[in-house]
Image 1 (cartoon, rainbow, N blue to C red):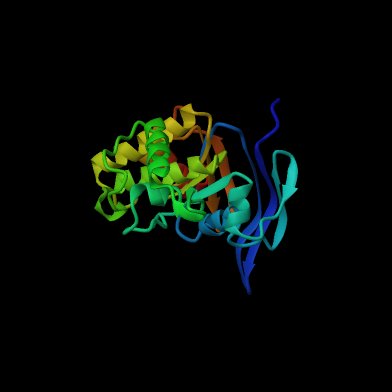
Image 2 (cartoon, rainbow, N blue to C red):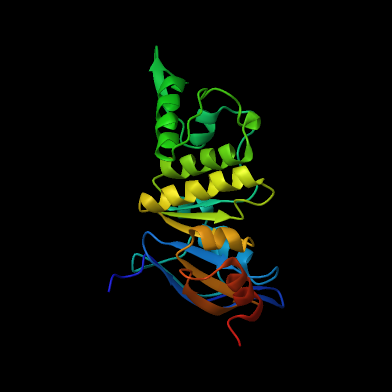
Length: 248
């Protein structure tokens, strides 16, 4: 059997007297789309914060490619190949598409010894990342605030590709999007899957999970209560799984 890309063992998180996570175990295989589901308060947000390096676990171990890791910050997680795209996307709305793709890793060129942004090269490479997602934006210089929700997701994913992230965590990526934009985001996830990227999809939308996920992990009150392949499960069956944790 192939070793898991990411393994969680006994992950716990407490905020004072509140136990948000209680000994969570699961593996993530390379190239899969793993859905992380559960009602509000199930522990999904706390787990994403641990995976992304925003918060340390109170207990437990996390292994990346078999090596135990403990991230001190989101930047450290990103350098190790884990990129997190939150619902609010953390884009800079007034900056251009290309500048957002290269946010924090801008390309420069020297003119008379003075470093200047290499906007042309950034635009060319940003266009290439978007093309990998089958997204065409004719103007790389337009501010992101002019884009649709689906297009903004594509820009955020392109930034993850720029960092060559092997694991991309997407937190409620279709929340507040219309039908057309939701379909566009689901297609972006399929493209990432086809490229061999590993996606951890946090979602309340069971139709989305049924459409793109390969496996689902369900949390309830801070514990893992179910884990199974998504193939053959309808959105209604997934909703029942989340509600009951697999109990009859």
